[in-house]
Amino acid sequence: MEQVAQLCNPASVNERNPDSIAKDLDRHSTVRGSLLRQVIGSIFLALLVAGASSVSLWLLLGRPELPETGTALSVADLYSGLRISLAVVAGAGGVVALVVAYRRQRFNEAQHVVSTRANAREETKLYGERFKVASEQLGSPEAAVRLGGVYAMFSLASDWQRGRQMCVDVLCGYLRMPFEIPASDNELAYSEIYSKGPRRKSSTDSTSPLSGEVKLTTRQEFQVRLAIQRTLAAHLRDSNTENEREEVLDFWPGIRIDLFGATLCNFDFAGCEAAVLDLRRATFLGDAKLNGMTVANETRVDSAEFFGGAIFSRSNFGDNASFCGAKFRRDASWAGAKFAVDGEFNGAFFGGAALFAKAKFGGGAWYPNAQFAGIANFSSSVAEDGHRLKDAQVDNPGLPHSWPSGFRVVNGKLAPV
Image (cartoon, rainbow, N blue to C red; front, top):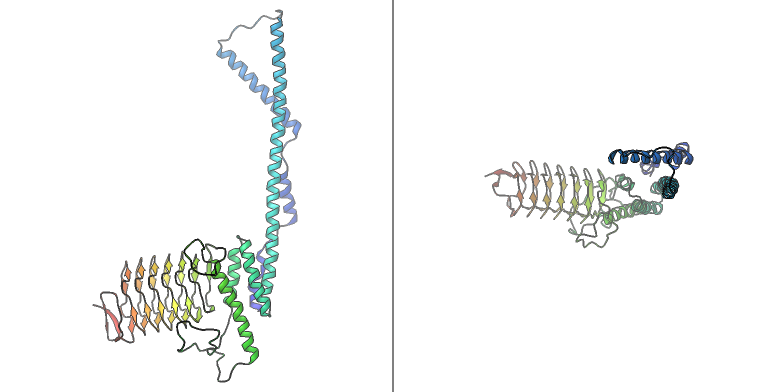
């Protein structure tokens, strides 16, 4: 498990320098300027505005003559002057109160910003520690510890939205690690569609049974991988949609799935939603269920190999979907699937039935050099840019095939009529 430990290296979780954190706190917690300076400046500004207002009013009134110097003031004039003096004092007090309230508000806002950022840093640090622990568990030689690491990583992904994709990438990376299942071990890689038939050849196959230690290790690793597949699928199913699956956890939208070259057993992503799906060169043991799956962007299944049934019925592909060079050893179905753009099956091998009934292609349906060993059904299939089946090989022309209109079998190959 050294490869897993290297893959899960948490060095990507950065820690800030304490000095920079202290400077950040000082910068946000300090309100510029002393209180006395701000009060004096505010009073001066108020007097300036009052003077300007008085001069403007005097000009608007037509410049009335002011009383001559030395004229005795009446009681009413003295009373009016007293009221003006009190109003000025009250105004100055109001200005001081406003300045103090403004500074207090600025200080509280700065403290809130500092507190929020400090909490975010503490959360990131905590998530980094949890990530490190879960990564170390995934790299353990003990299957039980690895299984605990799987659920710890899923728990972290649920809590840490910003790091969710990174956690998923680590778990997908685990599935991409080399894994071998003996071809004769039907209890691990079973098929619900077929009970008999040719199975995958493995480098571990031999005429003698496997030793008890190797068999136990393989079965334990199988359980770890199955836990990753099932839990990840449960998080990719939206409970708000019409999903009849029992395993539905909190939904994670916009997740990219990278399982390039992975060995996947009894793969069940039915009803899941993903942003990107990469299954290139993947090996599927047992049935692969991706019926009703929605992929928003590109889907890549090039050179993948399916040893059980492959079900893509009623799936929705939001962008180009490529199955070039894929090998489907048994029945494969895209019945009712919707391709927003092209569906590419260049050089694909269909060992069992190839079912494309009612499949809709927003672009073209490409099958150059494809090989059909079993029955093919394209009834009611629609492709905006047409079905491209020229030179596709048909091993059993006598089977009741249903080809798109305009094609027929000539010398074991499809040709336009």
